[in-house]
Length: 330
Image 1 (tube, rainbow, N blue to C red):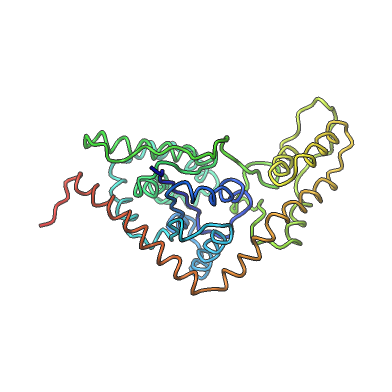
Image 2 (image 1 turned 60 degrees about the vertical axis):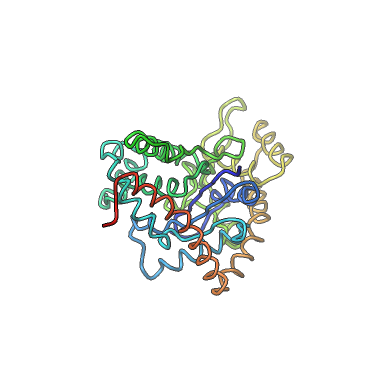
C-alpha cells in the first residue's frame, strides 16, 4: 500500500535552491511511489502580514515553480491551502487540545519573538498547530522536512497521539520524516551563517537569471583563507562547500578541497565555478517557470482540480474528528 506524503511551501515569494535541493528534486520520484499532497501555504504566510497587492501574485509564482520543478497534477494533489476550508475548521478544533506552554517553548516561536518583537501575533504562537493540521487532515504518514522543521513534525505526532489518547481511538497516524534515505538536508545561505531563506535575504531563487545568480554568489561571505591546513573551515567557507557538493561533480568538489588543504585556494575561482554549476541546474527550470506563469488557464485548472481532490480527503478526516468529538446534527 502506498504511503501518504505531504509537503507545503509558504506563499511568501520565490522558491530558492534550498527548497529545490532539500526536497523538490526528489518529489518527481515520490509521485510514482506514494500518494502525494503538495500545497501552497498561503494561510501560514499571513503571520507576516503580506501586502494584499502581491499576495495572489506570490501564490501564482510558487505554483508555477512547483510545476516547473516537475510536480505533476495528474500524479499528485497540488493545491492552495486556503481553497480547502476544512483545514481552517480542523485548525480551530486542534487548538482546543494544544497548550500555550508547549507552543511558547517551540524554537521557531522564540526565534520569531526575538527577531520581530512588534509582531508577536496569535498566528505565530499556533503556527505548529496549523502545520500539524495540514499533515493530519490528510492522515499523512511521511513529511519531507528540513532540520529546522523537525520540532514541528514532532509536535504533529504529539497532537495526533493526544487526540487518540483523549478519545480512546486509533484515528490519526503519527507522521515521520521522509528523508529520502539520507540525513535531512539543510542548504546554507550566502551570508555565512544559518539556512537559506527569503526572510534572511541570503538565497538564490529558481527564478533568478544567470546574471543575478553570479552576482549573488560572488558576493557570498568567505574568510581571508586557511591559516592552517589542519584547522577546521570557517562557517562561511564550509557553507560554500556544502552548496558546491550539492550542485557540482565530485571531481570539482575534490579539486577545491585539495586547493583549500594546500592553502592555494582562490575563493573567486571557486565562486565562479559554483555560480556556473548552479546556473546549469536552475536556468532550465527558470525557462519553464516563465512559460507556465504566463498560462493563467493552466494554473487555474490545476489548482481547482487539486482543491477538489484535497477537499475530498480533508472532508473525510474532518467528519471523522467531529463524530469522535461528539458533534451531531440536530
